[in-house]
Image 1: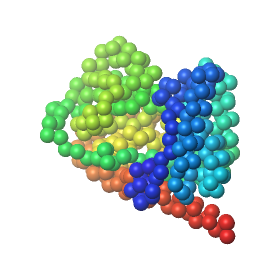
Image 2 (image 1 turned 45 degrees about the horizontal axis):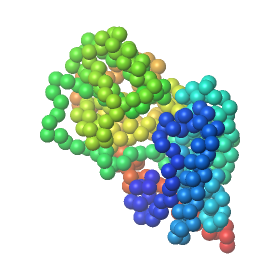
Image 3 (image 1 turned 30 degrees about the horizontal axis):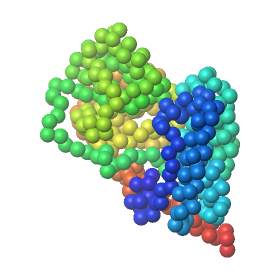
Length: 364
């Protein structure tokens, strides 16, 4: 979002202090780490640094909070009132919903319920909320009663400064058809559904499945692959972005998400945009969000609940190189039109301009 706004000619002044050490740090805090004095000392120190940086900032028009801002919005509201500036929050995801989908409410129900209350109040504070899909906006309305007209939709998109079509001097062997999944191994992405689809295609030795990433579901995937002796599977851990770009470029099909969690059904996963940007045919699970965003000429949707349908879709594309070429071409065109940094910058800056204008009119 910062790159998109900058590209659109908006001056972005970053005011940041580090609180979180990573995703696992947030998970451990939710499980009960927030009760420890050491955590609150980190909060006091980080927010102290943040306020100190803020007080030295030059003048600005809008105070915008990024993800995950469920706690930051409270301080941001005070600072925005102090400066008499409108407040915008790019919500992106509900951390309450993420916590529930990771089963953290089973380990510490009090903490997750507290997160829900914090999030519910936080959503009421900004002048404008940014979200990526109408389906997610509807969830916020059903869960918290936040009026949909308080949101503006800006898709997640991808950084096409890095994710773009590339040609490699050395490519994979012509007799191999590479199907790539990369990301976090969590229920949201339905990795085990993909594994069951691999089983359906076990006899197709020319179709190779690559899994790149880590996560709680990886152990189950490894056990499944070993138990069934699925020789057409290649498992890799996290890798550098440069190495990942090569893996995407040398694949024939990239896979999206096949989970049936609310989060998976309401979002368009970042990897889908990234692979579109690189001109790769994408196969992902059908959902209200993906159906609303894409046509059948751009990406291929299939059943989330039926591994046989996933396998059939992959096999059909394997046997239809002409359609593969069309999907490759169309995905890049569609990405550049709606989901590139340039497009995101135009969309987001227009919403911010309108907010600034309306606030100035209100003061007259």
